[in-house]
Length: 299
Image (cartoon, rainbow, N blue to C red; front, side, top):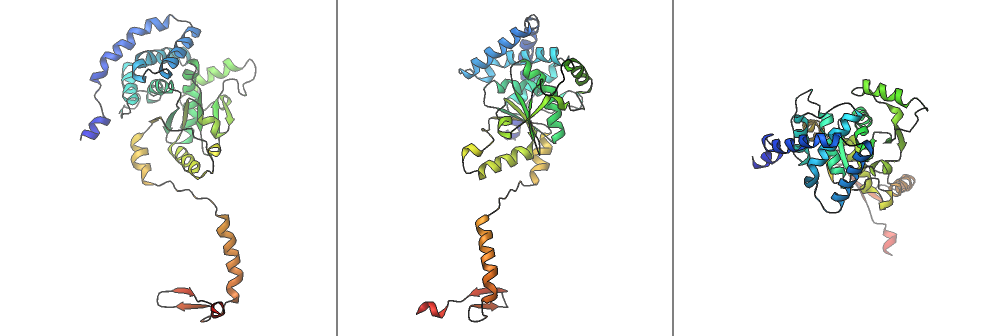
């Protein structure tokens, strides 16, 4: 039970920090866009200079809330901040349908991305990985954080200037605001290599793609061929599905064995020339064949 108590946490201990975040709202609302980016850059520098994520969590969450208000026109509610703080500690947060899990995950993802070590946001399918990357990356980019997504057959980097006709950006932004919760705006996803995608601060993808890329990296002959850069922090959507239901299906990967294939071709040519009871012996009882020593080889 102690293990489960570490995973699940009451919202009560987070109430004080929520009040502190709310107290900062007016301060950050008064800053310009450039000043908010500067504050985010300062937080990143502080964390990479030695401060812990917990040390800057209050300011990080307040910054994300203000960025969400300016980009998505959505404001994190207190319950979403509490859920985000639980996730930031590596615990499980159970939220009811409609409480905004996707938005709640942005604050802990941003806070841990400040370390520069990379954050994985794990979803249940490719569609959600692409949708959430395009939708939530507006917040991250506003604060100077890069975003990518990994799918079965491609990798993308969020890039607002990609494939958007000049003068149409405002129109596409308006459409995204209206359809962001269910439609993928492909115009903002620039195809890149998987290695480039994993170099982003925050990477969206499915557990299968992250898992298979990890297995393929372990089959690589050199670090230059590997695409993942390490494993620091992950947020899992639908954690019960991925860590219980999906975990029942093992990830199995194989690579062609060229050397063995050549031997099979050689054996196929030799077998017709062998003589039973002289070159080999058949044991019908155990259904096996044993190769006999060549008497000539003993002379």
